[in-house]
View 1 (cartoon, rainbow, N blue to C red):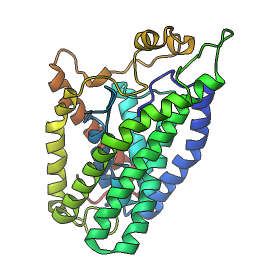
View 2: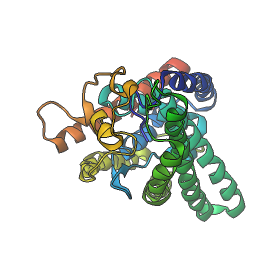
View 3: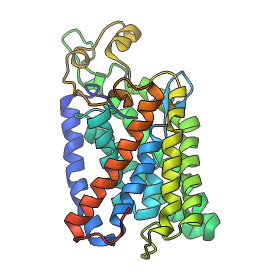
Length: 329
């Protein structure tokens, strides 16, 4: 679901940025106004769950791969606006440092995964929890909200792909960017997300939420208490996910819509000129690789770097918006 560079037209990317800019502004203000200052750095740890979940590639029907996002999970723990900011920063780190998702398409990726997913997921979670109540209602709501939220994001992503050949073609009628129309993009994307990826999102969300509620009930915005010891199990879970993330390398194949230009040319018979000749960002650690390290080791080091950057960013956010931070992560 990470739209790469040049799969969307510059105008499509500009529209997505125009939509997201006021959303980011509101999200920053809501975090500043509503999240206790000692809790702001913890949003970075919650964002780490999203960052790491997106590194666990899962085989999908049709030979592609997908991943969970944990957007509903963060929205449950801290609210949808902090979740929007958290996932946006995680996506920015992935794009800038690891080349996972484009810089031009960053706004579209955030619209899908940082806005649509957590807000829809959280609204469904809230409705079910209100009706069912208790721990059972919370976990059922989290699972249903996570499943629907992820698939809503995937559907919007598929539509963004699918409108490209309808709106942007050259003189001969060939697509300039993504070559697959809505009639192809939507079924192809939704097949994998309605089945395996959606279930993975449910598993990550419900599993982590149940663990956090049991092992560290004060981790979240609902409980204003904070102590270093109370969050140790959450940090331990993050460390375990970092250690396990190389399992994501076992899935073969690319995610749908994330192919190299030469692969697209082989599939459709030509290389769309906007895709082939577009702007490219040279990331520091492309595809989560680190120099001459073995692939699995580079993947793990990349995970460590991503988690560390998220914690640092949210400590800086806390200091910028609330003053000194009382809780040390």
